Image 1 (cartoon, rainbow over the protein chains, first blue to last red):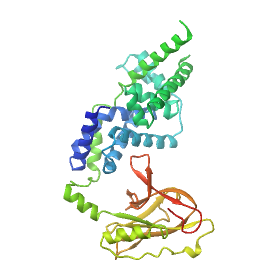
Image 2 (image 1 turned 120 degrees about the horizontal axis):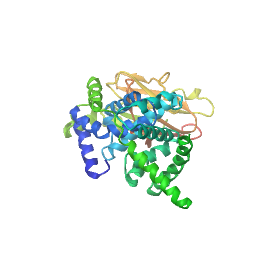
Image 3 (image 1 turned 180 degrees about the vertical axis):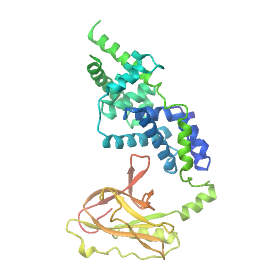
Image 4 (image 1 turned 30 degrees about the vertical axis):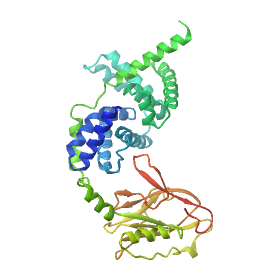
Length: 183
Length: 194
């Protein structure tokens, strides 16, 4: 998602969408639905709600597409918009602990290895416990597997700043996950 | 294994765990659901070819901020470019300006707008009480108010839905949503707005 070719494709898709080809926007949705959905999952424990929030982000992006500057990276613009939506929602909703039924649901899910799913749920929950600026640095670097320079650009940091943010966030997550992961 | 090795191993495990979270996806019909919602939304502006862009540039809402004398020249230039002639009295209400505040007049040229309001950091980004007054003869919307010294971010909200930055503003900043807010710098004393 971070190559110049992808940026050019994105700019073309934006241009075609603005020229009336709505289907061109579907290309952008399919390309970035994963990162946006996973971003929303860091702000909501409900998968259905996270899906709705991700939809909201894309609809909002579509409505505001004319204001997108094609000289910028589309993902950075979309990610910023989605992050702001998620933060607005977080301000309205009180954070709740990981419910027992969530764990039971995860463990009962036949599609996944229960232990692996439980570990993923705990890790995701620990990630939610970090301040967004740290959680997002880790998420972009590892969950979205973005190189450090792309993380830096997306978060508006220098390379060294992104490196320090990720390093610090990993340390904080290790502390938090260690505590939450301990029975 | 020393402490550093244990930390590195732990970090590697965490990074691997995080990478596995990348497998979470919103389902195969996600894009279709988004496109369904978009299909019900209002269409975006139509094709903009070169001539259309020129026409659009000439006809789209333009903004002028007069605050109070400094921007008058810029406003006059913009109005002349639009083939309009209009005189603004920046002193409206200046005699009643509360102490410590400076009079500011916002002006937006938007002939096709049905309603325009100024929203910004000075009014909590709310339109209530900040609706601009329209002159149907010129298509200009104006609002005179008084603001405290400092930096104020703002946009014009056209027809309750479309934020429009002030083309005459000297500064603008990222609004965090991928667009920009205009910035008004009000200095101490009467008529000291940038």
